[in-house]
Image 1 (cartoon, each protein chain N blue to C red):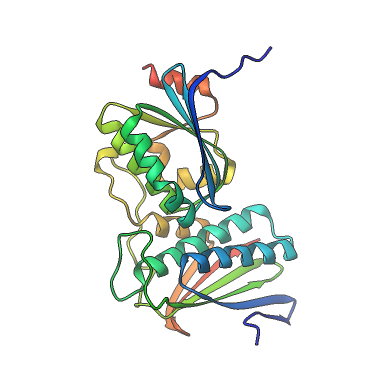
Image 2 (image 1 turned 90 degrees about the vertical axis):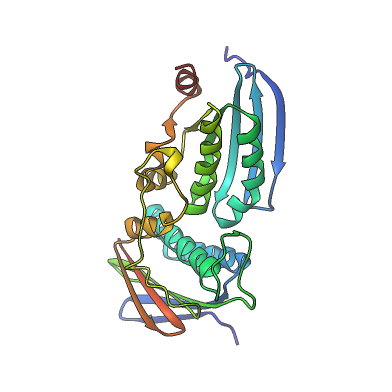
Amino acid sequence: MSAVHKQHAHHSNIWRRAFVGTMEGISAAAHWVDTIAADQQLPEQILFALQVCLEELLTNIVRHGGTESSGDLSVVPIPPLNVEISISTGAQRVSMTVEDDGKPFDVVNAPAHRIDQPLSAIEPGGLGIQLIRNFASSIKYEQAGLGNRVVVEFLL
Amino acid sequence: MKPCARFQRRVVCNVADDAMSLDIVDMDSGITNVLLSGRMDLQGALAVDKQFSAIADEKKKVVIDLSKVTFLASLGIRTLIMSCKTLASKGGDMVLLNPQPNVEKVLRTSGVDTVIKIVRDMNTAAAIFSR
């Protein structure tokens, strides 16, 4: 059975699809969101914001969701984590829910970093969370569904 | 008549199928112009990471032309920052040229613009290197 679902209810459309937590899975999810955005004729800025949040959430899952975090960009958990994404579009907002079965990680309360020190003192990390918080209109986290559930919303 | 860009050496790398391409041009002025194209996401950053390390090790005045970069994520920023740190540690510098509006928003939101200058044209970049 196809893992893709589209539902219509109360003037909103909902898409849902399962992915694996790998680099290929991230690319597939990005293409899927592009397709939905084109179908819904979403504004370019909303699509960009969706893609930023999707990329950062999935990168966190792939790099840190396994039993051991990896600083190596190319190392993914084996077996890869399961990820489920749903997108809902309405008249005033777009909502994206990302669930994963990795380690609990509260993206809402995790430390975010903006570069505000001299170049020599900068250490990598935390920029992705900063980007999510700035590009989404709102962000919520709970332990539900597959394990971690993050809901980001974008006002149209 | 528009003058032709003069260069000493040019390297074009298609580093991934549709992720990124990298075009490195060593100009007579001593500036290395790196033209990036594509998505600088996790896959794109992985694809160009080694080339960026080599550029940072070997060059001194580096312009990263972002005009054809359609997407930038935190790991792409990490690649830029780490390369710029290496350049700065040996007296070099990096300048970001002409990012698209959404990519520029990522750069400013994350604070990259506070440590790496963003410019609109090569003349401004050259002026920064000559300071």
